[in-house]
Length: 60
Image (cartoon, rainbow, N blue to C red):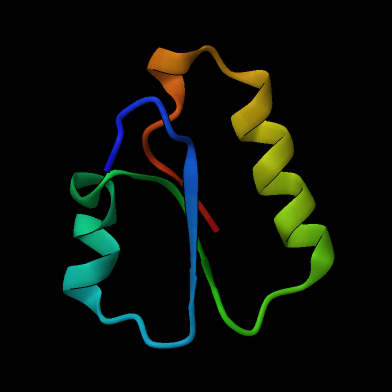
């Protein structure tokens, strides 16, 4: 994955190992399904307000 891409993963199948590893796969955020639109908005607001170095590790 291009490191310049700010990708958020939304998944209905998430195990503990995946929760710990999604950042290593290039994702800067994670939402577990089902999620509310407000959760998506909060995550995107957080990600978009950070500088590029601070994008890793945002999850709901």
